[in-house]
Image 1 (cartoon, rainbow, N blue to C red):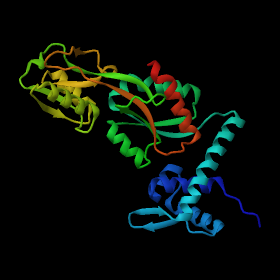
Image 2: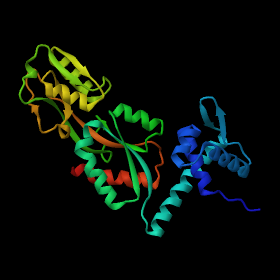
Image 3: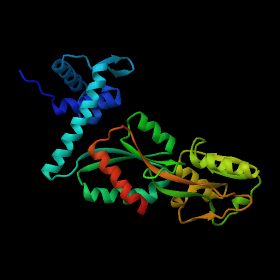
Image 4: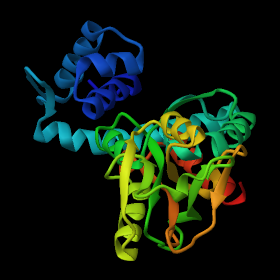
Length: 284
């Protein structure tokens, strides 16, 4: 009897392989854990090979499972692309997208509105956080792709470059405090590292008065006049002011904005959204 690889079985298998737990995979494909487990057993029976090792901390792939995963991604990508092209319905599905918090207000409305106009059947889940947190989510495959901040300037990779700037309250001279009081993101972020390195190189005394991954919290501290912050120029709200470089505020570097994938071989939907980012982000 002829054997066929069912698309639904492959889609469920890929979800399990990427999330490493039946619970998260079931939520992704809209099935119960019991139904997902039955699908895996059916796929294992069809291939006559074990695909998963089940343990207390989740599941891992067997050697045969790893081999199937590569084939499954190729098959699903081709299937989804062909269906969208031949049906004329366009792309559909859910895409998990990460964006640095400081770019959210400036860029996200334009990115999402223009993509929805071209692909109305796609639902984009957005996760905003500093770049190190986004990269951790990509490694765990809980995001499909993300815009990330980078110090690199690789041609064809960096979509645009944004200068880092000192930002303060328009009505308070927080930059005159001795030592300089800063409101910065987490220590592993580019803005925190750039501020520390530039001030140390210039011999300017400072202390971090407020450190947080929350952009809202940082802006609240700056608005209170208690500290100054370092933001990308595009992220500066109109009620705050960019402080010109001076002896106490050395010039800051620029950072790049690039696309990073959660998987080495993105789906047709993820690839199309990435191409959309490459088209629109340089123009914002």
